[in-house]
View 1: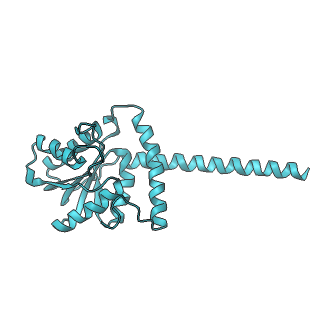
View 2: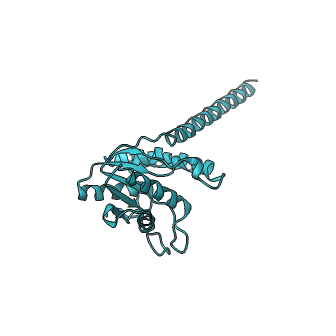
View 3: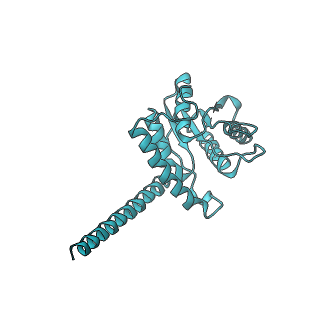
Length: 212
């Protein structure tokens, strides 16, 4: 009888814990979605366009294209005098994400002198680390951060950890062509945010260029 009660109690605890985890997941996903639905951009020193993957031949994919076009629109609106393209060169690819972003900006009418490049990063965390160095070298302080809507919560937090004051101008979710891409991206962001939280909590200095 006692063993049966213990099993029943354990089962209830497991169910309650599972429900709590599910509720936490739903609330966090809602927070990611909500943060990406709000444009807080204001006049700043620089617009930072976060990179996204290239096609195998080095052409920009749609994610990088839509982010770069958003950055170009902000520059034409007078939001900042510079646009910083952030994103390095992955192995087996012919050029960096930043270089592909620059190509789109030039085609959108930006002068070359208004475009800055950060070509060392391979992750959002490294975007923030190496963008800070560019900003410091140019004596630039605040920035408008441009990325896809699902990316803004984590990106804003990581840039804040680097001491960069940012506002955000997310690319609207309705510009994502693949209908399955957005929910999958929300799930990936949930996992990535908590991975970075663990790294920050335990001070794990893990990037592909440690010490650089």
